[in-house]
Image (cartoon, rainbow, N blue to C red; front, side, top):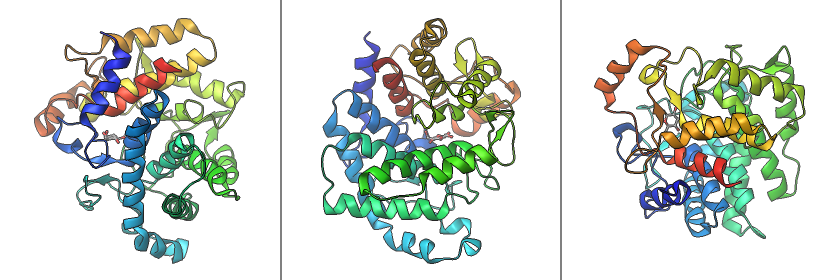
Amino acid sequence: MNYLDKSVQVIKEFQDESGAYIASPNFSQYKYYWFRDGAFIADAMNSVGEKESASRFFEWGLNVILKNKEKIERIISKKLEDIVLEDFLPTRYRKDGSSDTGKWTDEQTDGYGIFLWAFERFLNGEMNEKEKSGVEYITGYLQKVWKLPCYDVWEESSDDIHTSTLLSIAAGLRAAEKLLERKTGWESVVKFIKENHTENNRLIKSSGNYGVDGSLIWCISPFELFTSESDLIRNTCERIYKDLCIGGGVKRYLEDSYFGGGSWILLSCYLGKYYKDIGDHEKSEFIMNWVEKNFDENGYLAEQIPQDLLKPEFYKPWVEKWGKIASPLLWSHAAYIYFKKS
Ligand code: BGC
């Protein structure tokens, strides 16, 4: 099987007519549409020349943003100290752009940053009026809320400020600076990360947890907010490898109990891509072999593989609650494309 072609095919097959990418078609809680997953998927599709697919996703996203413009105007006009979680934009959408806020840990800001990052990589030429307006709204929103606590990329811990959320926002505001040809303050976000989200010259998970998290890899792969020569990046990546990579599969973080805390395909792909880029072929191939071994008989990649579980006692209760681990997870396929392709 050609896994690259298969991954493109899986994503195409499950892209909705609206342009939105479903997170996973076979898992009750993920039959929804996320900006985070969607933007990473659109970027992967763009990288393999599937422009039409990517373009339809961005169109969907811009429509959702413009539909939410009063909500965005409201939060922007509020004093920072008066903003509450309910003021944030949602995360888990339906394909028609509506959401059932209140039923999910929905207040997460990273996806909007990732959307801007991916959109700038996609765009070729000038933005039209609608695109400009959508980008302005997202930029204004992120400039307002970036320093506030909210749920993280794993949809947990709303009391903290999360490093990978800040990384996503910095990448998004840097992209917006190019798109809008004006300063957006992304460098202040990076400065804030360096001053407040590091310990012993490596990135930490969040303001409330000085441990390591697999999503910290986004500092370089794919966002390239720092150079791979910087000690901060080297130390962060080595720590992810040492603490979280078991047999080629990467954990989210050491205390993870979701489905027992298995190994995540997409995190492995981002870490593997970092090693590929710095020329550490031994590690990158070790990880690639693990990822490719985990395509199932249908050519699907799951969200996580239940091996070397961190908290095995939690595996069964999650399966009983929500069913088998999500597969295919379109974001896993997108991360594979990113790792394999470039
Ligand atoms: C993950 C999110 C992801 C969602 C849909 C959740 O389990 O924590 O990062 O966006 O699944 O794939």
